[in-house]
Amino acid sequence: MPDKKLLSIAEISRLLEVPESTLHYWKNRFAQYLPSTGRNRQKRFKSEAVEIFKIIASMLKQGHTADDVMAELSRKYPVNAAIEPQGPDHAQCVAPAHMQQPNLEPAIQLAAAMGTEIAKSINEGLKGMLSCMPAGSVTDDVKECMAKATADLNSQNESIEGLKDENTQLREKLSIMEAELVRLRKDRREMEKFLLDKLKAVTK
Image 1: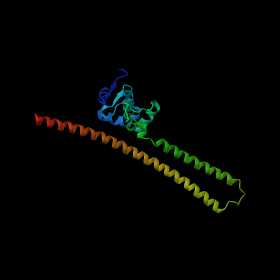
Image 2: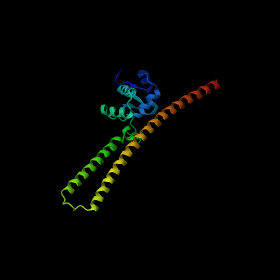
Image 3: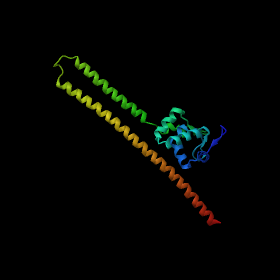
Image 4: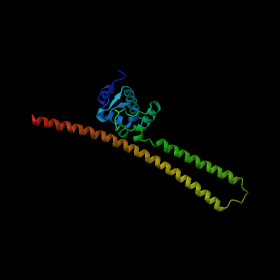
């Protein structure tokens, strides 16, 4: 197909033999990696977006999660902001998709890893310091403080793990809500068409 051709969701649906409702969900979920222009019903996709849709379809069919797909796309493709017609309100109404839907999982994983390493380093440092002190110079108060500090660090790590689990659950709920929104939009379009057909039949 010509490189400059812009494709609608309906055209991509026919090319890939994938339902339009499914493609609408994918285009919202992975928007930052799908080169496009226009907004809402006027949105059109560059030809290279077809290959990205193929990767999404293939990975999901193989049982990969949406997060797996996002990670693979981030490895292979740059983040794309939708190309909008330039106008006075352009800077206010358009923002890159990756800013609209931030991915917090890597940051949480990094924080958890850092917390674990800090706890290990502190424990090792304290053990080394105490091993160099004369026998009997370590008071019960020092031991109690060490135990409390260790417990606090462990508690912080547990809190980070809890945040990771909560973030995963929220992402799953968001995916379900996005799919439901796509279904409701489709139902609304079908109802509008049905009512218009009825009105036309009555006014004839």
